Length: 594
Image (cartoon, rainbow, N blue to C red; front, side, top):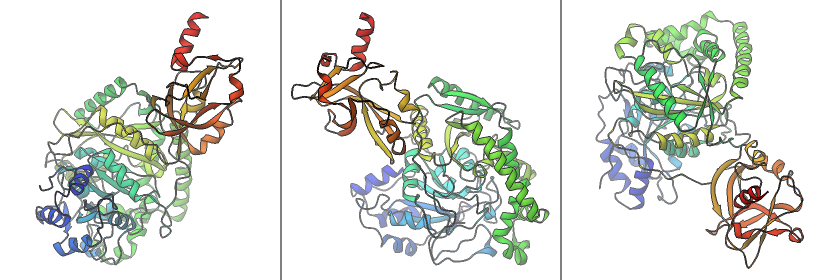
């Protein structure tokens, strides 16, 4: 057995657990298939460089990414390998891995190449590099998107199951949308940026490309952690707030497609699919988002790009890509006063955006409004690039998380993508909805012909939550269910207790409530499981009146969860309704009889 292009993390992990091949054989064979003349690659790791990494492997049981290959955008440091940022004159050889690379290696992943990019991560097109333009994986006449062009293309071709890019203005999202893959842009500070050549250091994020939402999320879990060596690293103040099964998504009320009718048609098809799944689409005025986006290149943040490479430009400006150089040299048009004025405007617009977003669970936008050809970009590089950032440029300025997802093929056979945008630290909620979208509208694995594997619905409890069994007035549709939903609790499943409980209708309770009591002559009682954010659990428990309380319930499959219990004295004079099997059935008959 040999590894195949288009394998996901699960495919690699299964092969290693089954001892189908050893990492050295598999990774050397994979490396040998990479063409050094391909513009996607800036540096292909030698056999010795791969072997050096293999020495740190332990076992598939100890390392979640054991032997899994990945590639890294060449503005992210890999120890002992030159970092060029797609500018050979800028190249340096770092002694240490970037924190993100180090964490992936510690988990067992193996870097096999460094990838091409728009020079100094300045661009959304994938054409601004002396190593060549990286073509789209579906049609080489079209752009791949940038700046993380090589990293996206490597995943779309199926060479690796995931890769690292960066995202300041959309570089981790636009290439995903153009190549039919997932692009995860984390909340700023969730992943360390130590060891990354800055574009705008206050806005930069390391991003993840993957074939599936599950894979992107799994890699993100390895990468996330505060880094004391990174001044912009931060920890989540609370767990993500999950959405209901019928979320509200804010969409642009009048998007500009810049003449790309195929993109427009694909967008409307996507909206129809979402509406059929019960998603509520709320048209919003995106004017503040667009004004904020204009600040990124039309304001003093250009000076931050200059700050990153000012010393280099003093001596080597003529060795830069002329389009990139022209953009960064605009920094001289802005003063320190301009920078403060722009920051005040950013804060005002961000507050406005947050207020609009508070009415919905997330924003839903086209990843890009058009998909241009390479010739179209070369003819007007700045204008076309600006158009591609319509729905991406504001996101980091507004401190949001984002997830780019495939949304089918357009009428011309090219990919179309959508992006979900939510407030900071909503990354896990985005991934949760992304998995649902993946099941609703599954896509092929990048540009390969391989279909996605059927993925069962995961009922694992997310970090920072308590799994709670509710039995009565807190059930879905019942009077007190809002006490859960207003705390962003997430419905998990309906199940039953172990056959060791009896259910009683408690007298003189408003609204009517049952009491669940453990008994040796009990039966299985229907319950619902909800995951409640831990920081909201105390306020929920404070609402529970005597004789009810929260204890530990045993479910039919042997699991123990927190759940509603009742003090024994309260069942004196209460009606035993165990025969109904659950509160909902009793209330249905009781209401009919009443």
